Structure formats: C-alpha cells, structure tokens
Length: 264
Image 1 (tube, rainbow, N blue to C red):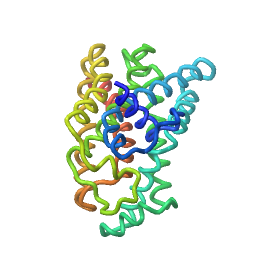
Image 2 (image 1 turned 180 degrees about the vertical axis):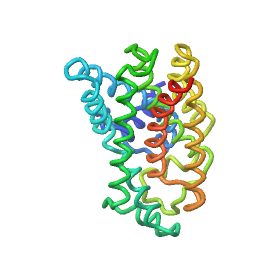
Image 3 (image 1 turned 120 degrees about the horizontal axis):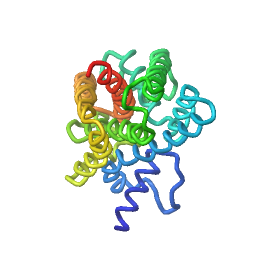
Image 4 (image 1 turned 60 degrees about the vertical axis):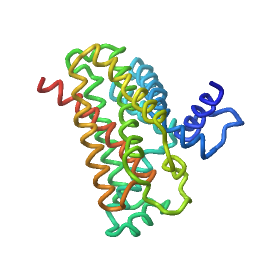
C-alpha cells in the first residue's frame, strides 16, 4: 500500500504542479508504474476545473466561468499537455523526416504552427464547453451530471493518450526525454489501472444517460488515427505526442457530446 501511494504521488508530481511530499522524486521504476494513475490524475484536474467553473458561474455567468475553468486546468498541469500539442503542431507541420520532426519537437521555442494550433484548440475547447454548460443541451442542466462530465472528459482523454504506450514503441533512441521511463516497460497492472480509472467516470455518466457510451467511438477513433499518424512519420510516439493526444481527445469528447444531443 505504501508503495502504491508513492507511485500515485510520483504520477501527481510528474503530471501536475500540485505539491507532493519531499521524498517523492522521478524514480524511473515508479515513474514507469505511474502510468496506471494517469487517468486518475484526470479526476483531480477535472474536479478542480469544475469547482472553479461552479464558483465563477455563480458570480459571473457560464461563459466567463468556462475561461476561468480552463485557466485552472492549465495552471494545475503547468500547460504540460498544451505544450506537447504545440510541439507536435510545430514538428509535424515543419518537418518532413523523422529526424527533422523530432528535432523541431525538442526545440523549446514555439513556432507558427504551434501558436496557431494552440489558439484554435483553446477556441474549440471554450466554445464546446460553453455550449455544454449553458443548458442548451437537454438533460445536461444538472450540476452533478456536468461535474461527472468534466471528470470523464479529462480521465478518458488521458486513457486514450496513455494507451498509445501499451500499443506502440517510443520513437526517440536517446534517453534525454523525461517521458522515456514511461515507455520502457509496463505490466498488466498499468493496463488495468489505466482503463479502470479512465472509464469509471464514463460508466457513471452512462448510468444517467446511456447515450454517453457513444462518445467512446469518436474519442478512440481519434486516438487510433493519431497513433497511426505518429507511427507513419516517426515510427512510434514521444511524450509530446501523448500530450497532443490528450488535448485533442478531450476536445473531441466535448464535441461528441454536443453532436450526440443534437441528433439523438
């Protein structure tokens, strides 16, 4: 039990800016096992994002509350996944060989593709969330339901991202990346833990409205095509690819909810 707590705090330290006990470090073995808790981190980020939304919705209204909610999630993760998305936009937008793509993604400077990509991503996230929380969608005016939806979006998108580790190879041959230990090996515990924490909030949503099960289709189709695209160009994935997958799948989740309630 003590070891599992240490592994959880390793995940919390690696994926967020939340303070952890001083004895927690980037132990490669624990960091490798921490992948099982990556979707659980989504529970925490989603809960905080909803809490901030609920507070500012009461004070200022839903549209402004969504912005503060997005700010909270960015601050909580240190823009970890947004940075990965920007690097992927720059790398795959400006590179035509594996070596060039990896070199561009490793550059800390953000380019035109990355800047434009992040702006468009955040606009999509803002407008889709605003639609969802503004009570325009029938049967989604319950605060409890919206809370679980926030958590499910973050946990499921993180499951989609970490599942690439289970099916593809790490692309970089050097050991300079912070994400390299995650890619070294995994056991059934990482797979079961990731899917358990990733899918449980969605299962609760399905208990309220069965249609929510259908969001799995676009989210994992997106994950499949992104993983295939990464494999084609760089023979696998990097940490930036996982961050980009999380961000894109989160937005796809919100868009899928809107589409489902428009046509079903």
